[in-house]
Image (cartoon, helix red, strand yellow):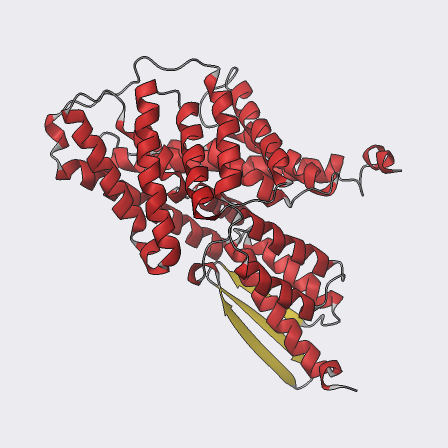
Length: 422
């Protein structure tokens, strides 16, 4: 028996692979219950049913027991490594899927994870900046500002993208970047009001700050709380609200720095672009996100389809009901579409295709408006209650959508659907 075939050596490779994979899945934004499921299944497939897994957003523990022997391994979670792009997220979840099926050995899995971390951005720094501009302008068009507001938003997005490019090479900047960027952009907007700018401030500021908005983090926190993962759900929610507070602090500080109180601020948009333009903004947003987040080329069409379903569900339900409940229908349609794409059409993992939908359903941007309103004394908490209902609606929509897919559309469970494969 060669040294690499010894049970101890295989077990060491397996535990190391589980730790690295769990770390990568956490950084991809996966819920802790799904990470625990993946790691436990992979351990059983590799003949180690006694491996116990405990996962938190910032750390994971692996425990192995065999007779009188036991071993505990720990790996840090998502907040000590660089954030993953869409192509990297897809690769991580593809590795996890193959390992769950027993098609990938721990040794090969470790090699693929190492390659994944070193994969460069498909479009380089120029594509990164251009993609960010397109994403921002797509969001701006969906908010239907004036033409003047669109080019101002584009200018601020270019400045923000340059900061992000610099921060990619200096990870230590990421902690203060949201405050610094929001401060500078809001100060620039406040100066613009002194020279006749007539646009609502947050409508200008939210699109270029979209990359900092914790919409998915807040939604995943509600899903984890629904699954009784109280520690991880609560910690994610606190982290998400802290990000919103930091952004609001920077925005308010930027306005205060140039004495915005003596300048009347417009509350509504005048001379808005037409109502058909938000659909063009949806396409521009998805294309920009594809370039900015360096997703694989085959993912673009699926991302656009899922984004259209999310936006359609929210928009059409808004014709009959009002308020945060519309997010429920968008999230349910988005989740079912993403799961059908993954399992029926062998497309990208669902989390990749419905990530754009989380930005479209906008819990992060609405949360920033809510926190900023409270900090300035404009609102005393009503907007935050609406935000919580919106988050709950999105999380519930995701859960109901996943349940409906599993019961009615999964090829292994729905014979009428599976029959089409023969």
